[in-house]
Image 1 (tube, helix red, strand yellow):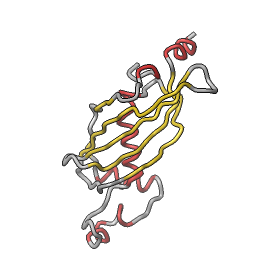
Image 2: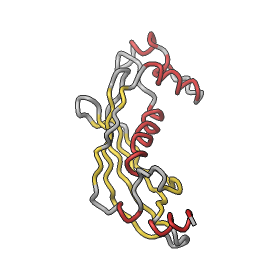
Image 3: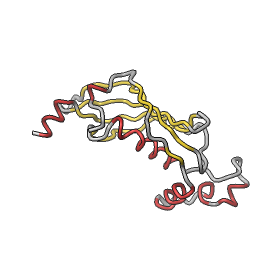
Length: 156
């Protein structure tokens, strides 16, 4: 199991995620189509030429999902019971087709669950950067994470 247990997720721990991903036109068009997001800024190249960016923007909801996905292997794979929420989501710089995204996660806070004896609540801060080291996504995520004892109990 690659994910970290509650006990490993101490405030101050920082993970530089190994997976990087270049965002393609297909990613953007497919995600926009799958989610019925018909904003011309994502799908219409001619319209976007006249925008302040001069080209199509990558759908911000795709970026948020990509950031969450990139973090899974090294932080929560097999050790999470679920996301409890995303907060303070920001997109400070636009992302375009061909940009390569990398992600850093910092553990901000944690506490044992008051309702469950097998898990704790962890607050993660995810920061995504492009190939120019510009921050393109920032968010805080709260997750319910298994303790080692909780994982042993599940296996029994």
